[in-house]
Length: 322
Image (cartoon, rainbow, N blue to C red; front, side, top):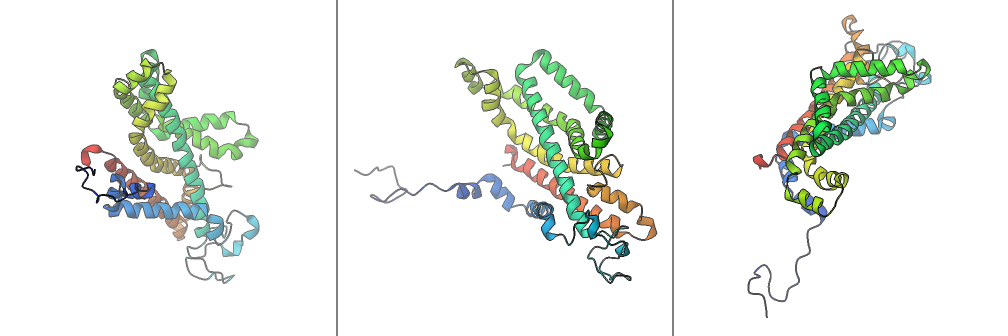
């Protein structure tokens, strides 16, 4: 006898297969919001284009600008698209004072900037989420110490905190290893200056989640606090963390560029976009504007696109706006 309440298919027909993961993801609220936002799609395209250009820099760059054997000083200060008067070589975006192709230096500089930005955000996120979970779940003196340290750090600009940490680390590291460790010191300095916002948000969300029934049920069945925090509370506080991480990526890239521009970031042997901008500034008023202009435009496009993605993600994950 057919089920009279089932009107979705004819009697005797086979049930429809469940949708695939790709179909379910395509029909999700976030994907729908992304398709409805031209700004988010353009920002995602620009970000993806720059990330792919950095990853495949050895394949798409015309030369390796940091290989001394590939440089020709006679190509120095070549204007964009204009053949050099001595060698006849032409470069899309011109060359710098050492004859390095600006287009190639931007691609290789992107690799350093993106690597430092991603690693610094990952370090800040892991540290901030861990401390935020401990502060919110354990409470007591643990919460007081963590949050007072966070409050003290918030009284200083993050760039000054990064400068202080970078200077202390450079003083500890032996001179012969400073250039080799400069990138990792930069990552730690930026990460330690940005963990506070992760900790504050996760602590607030943990204070709400730990009083819910599913956490109390986990306590009743004997789950350890570490397992409760990792397996039950953490998945429910990740949405704001992803938004903060996206926005922090743009801030970390700008912080790295600022430190490198000040001469305390990436070493000259591994220049990032900030280092290229600092080099270009020295020749801006002598007429070689392209050495500064194109790296600055690349940094602006990268930071702006990532920021726009973060703004869209914040709105897409906000249940009040759905």
